[in-house]
Image 1 (cartoon, one colour):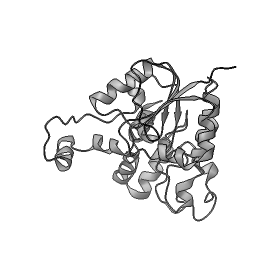
Image 2 (cartoon, one colour):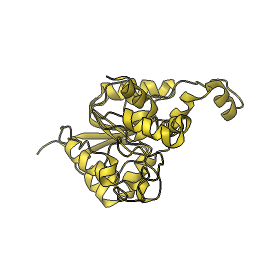
Image 3 (cartoon, one colour):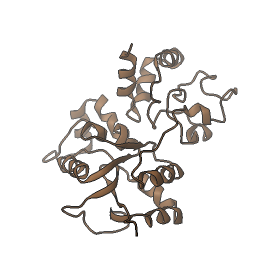
Image 4 (cartoon, one colour):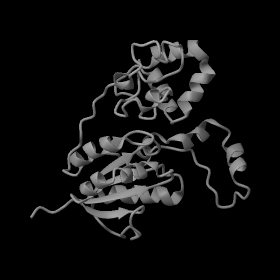
Length: 254
């Protein structure tokens, strides 16, 4: 009988919304778990992470912010064949990364009265600490997309990700309701699809929580958006989900 792959779910600093998205799948998610041996998942069991264990696929949500979390992600990397980051916080630094673009000292003083033993590091995605094998993007992730990719990952393979824009899934495209047609900031043309354009469907612009399409050139769109609402507003929107750094790197490319 073929041995089941060992699977673990970890949460670093985050709202844990991506894990709740998985639990919202109900029976579909637990049927997936039956295909593996669950090593750790704090939301559904209280057994502590073993001191030494080999994991076939580790799914990690959230950003490593504390020293303890940095040590944990390094331990997870050492003991996992595949390390999969789950969600915007893990992939790009997420909403907490807004702090990076502010006065860090002023921000932390606003949050904490007693700063003793409080670290105040820059917020970074997991790939800035350890090597990442695969990313499941989103804020939160799309549950059905997770199931599709997880099935492949549990076989020890890396899935292929379609590099198409959010606009390809958007019901507003080529219509007067399109945010770009209304001269509003929207990053759908350069952001990775897979979310079913949930934000535009709900009346909100795409602010790039899933990150950039591989190989995309952002310069023309960013310049156009600056003409729509100004540079400061574009910068502020790019900061919401931590995509600003990646856009700036892209703009520097020839």
